[in-house]
Image (cartoon, rainbow, N blue to C red):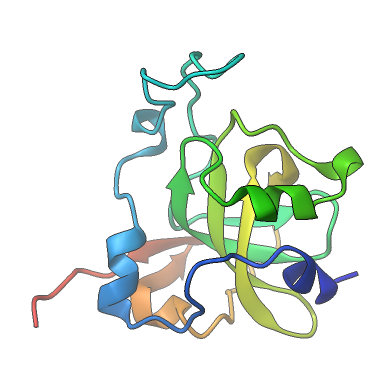
Length: 155
């Protein structure tokens, strides 16, 4: 099940590796309690404020598929293409009105980028460091299972 997850649900924007300076533009440094659905969102259930359960630097695992990853960005609600959304089997398709997380993901075979709904994530309790090659470029740690963003230094 592992490596085929990345092939089934690829992130449609430009492939990694990005340079650390490019990637830091993608990170929202607000605390999870500050990430909520914008007040101007439309649609059924989209006007309710949602709070992110996990934060940048936290290691999580997928509830169904055998992979884990380090969160490097959070979207308050689904923010990917309709094509990506429809590629997920209907019976497994998560709700759009919840936080979605960008992960430096890994399974037994490989490392990749994953985009995962909050309902499909659980805290990772292994305490093992993440081996994704972008982790040391952007983060320090882990310290007690959590990573800390490196300081951004101007060029």
